[in-house]
Image (cartoon, rainbow, N blue to C red; front, side, top):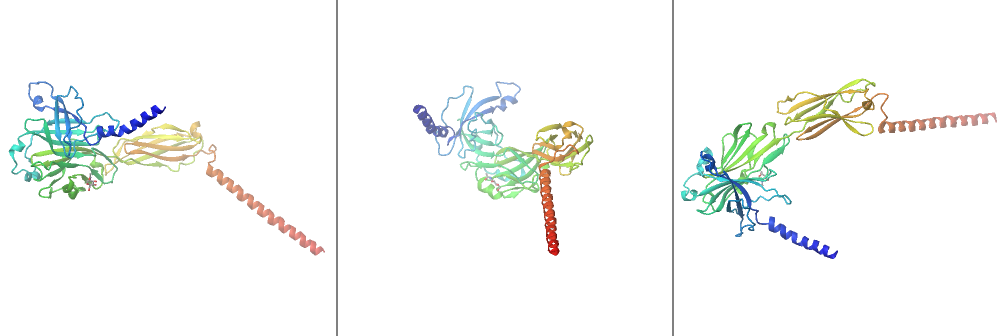
Length: 436
Ligand SMILES: *[C@@H]1O[C@H](CO)[C@@H](O)[C@H](O)[C@H]1NC(C)=O
């Protein structure tokens, strides 16, 4: 017994050390698929175009690389990446064995051709650029956190330096209509790189159903915003210059804002980007007609209509339920559904009609009829009372009212009889006196 307890105690003591060693200061090594485009492009297919590789991340103040765990034999390349800001640190949540998804490819530095970034590409050392450059794109499997990093290899080695990293903690954003939206995008540039300090540019693009457009572009060197930025879309310029916070703020979410957003960050000759999905999900407002329901006679058929409006996207499941006097709910099916109607603001409306046959013994008892709307933005319900003459049992309120009325009546009778009887006795007394 004591043995077991001491073992537990010991394991409790060692557990934090274990956690620290695994997920503390050092970054876990990243397994990446190396995409060999040169092989894939040629007409001769030589070997696989995807090669498994491993990135060992070295963060600031740490000469030693993460513990040399036994390398998986299928890994064909191992790189050591100096990443002082730990931008490539992707830790799986504790208990999860799922690894982040990572793709590695060759990167070709090139002067950017876009107008607002041309001022960046001046007098750069060609020696610095003539090296092997790589681009890594990492994404957590929960799809929330993603990084894209441009890395430079020191001549003839497998040692890489992260030079430019762009990260987002919100790869998937869901918003209600009319709310302000923040699309997170942070960038980091290596201060030791000759590219650092020669300017940067940020560009946000929007894509939906095959069409794309520029939302805004900002030249950080000239402190200049592109001519016609999207209305309601802004950057926090102070935060951008202070700590590379390039997050896009949308003043007010609208249905047309749903889609793909790309945060692109340029250094002279380099470009890194992350892609963010924004979903506008607005659940419907429900209303039931007629409400309250008219009182039907037993056997009469009532038609009740539920209208769902102002929702987006258009996927919606409408259904009906009945809660009987016994408190049990049962489904009444979807009813007769209408098509979707599109409103000017991009939201939809839809309705469903239900016929209530009060001769149905299960309906004849009355109850509560509920319209249920299931939507990606949430589930909504609206209810209306169904009462049937001659069948409905009194509700608690009715019973209370009846008791109240009974009490009042009782009091009244008491009062009347007391005054009547009382005065009657007085009269008899008076007549008695007169007689005397
Ligand atoms: C980036 O800036 C926005 C706007 O000022 C702010 O709301 C957000 O918290 C900032 N993000 C970080 C990680 O600092």
